[in-house]
Image 1 (cartoon, rainbow, N blue to C red):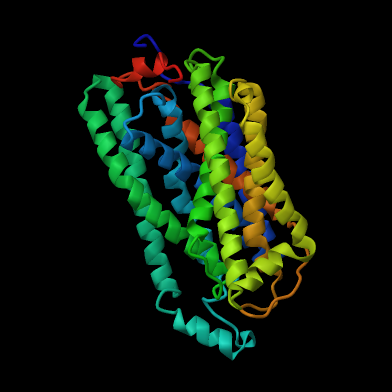
Image 2 (cartoon, rainbow, N blue to C red):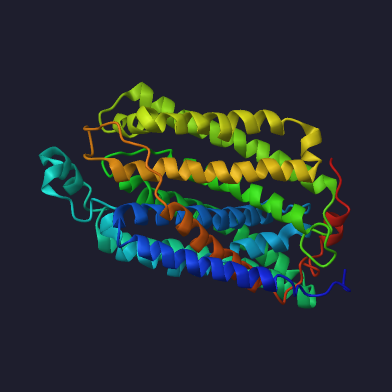
Length: 404
């Protein structure tokens, strides 16, 4: 493996991704002049989508290090590259801070909300206040960037000298980072999604968001490995059917986990029947948004679950990648379902009404903008490094991995 060259490809893809990203962000900025609220909600959907993919890769990397796994070493570099764009999300978060009043009604609640709801928001003001909101965001990003950068830099450093101390350091930070990242992502989901409807709450919501983006991150990893497996100098060149089988099993496990969490959250709210919880569910399961909820139940759980039961599908990268493409799309639909109905709500709290299904054009431009910038940054970080962690002492074990 020492004869492997450093990765120097992706130049054209980098330029195109950066160009698409720039155009997408500019068009999204134009959308602010026409409908600031829906534009910012669209931007938030795209931000959460691609941030989740990066955090999912970080979580997978940490979990493998904590478990002292060896099978994944041959694809670990692409995992590291895919969580390396986390620094760019600090800059992409700035528009959310600037236009926060268009997203979060608790920042400047109008009197029209009613006395009961205003009192509820006042009671939560110790947590839901803008200065503390910013402080928490700084803490979240600090934790994510620290763990991500250390794991990436330790791995790259090991390519040079092959010292075992880098493996020990990665395992320590992987183990220590899991609870830190898990807690911060949970509270970020509370702050950036759940507080869009500040009188609603769900203790399962953080896990719901995590399970969704982790499944999507496994899907994009599978697609990238499939695309690059025929290029001897790229990231997936040394994978075997056994690696794809493992990825397929992880996809099956987290498809089931997402379904379990989604059902548990719905079941608990249905059973409790509390006035502060029910409106959030009713808006998304009645009227125009009901077909979207049905699509999520069928397309995010039932169909993928039964397809992934097939061992043959897991061993066929092309077909598995088609299913992964669907999982990436349905995760985007899931985030739209979570975020966009907020734009149509005339009241919060115990009041609710059926809302129309409005798909704003900035959903596409913001997706292209943030997605293009993220991909360009990841390709830039990948260039100049080996596509496989050649200094890892367990690389040979990964190359020879077979199903137990």
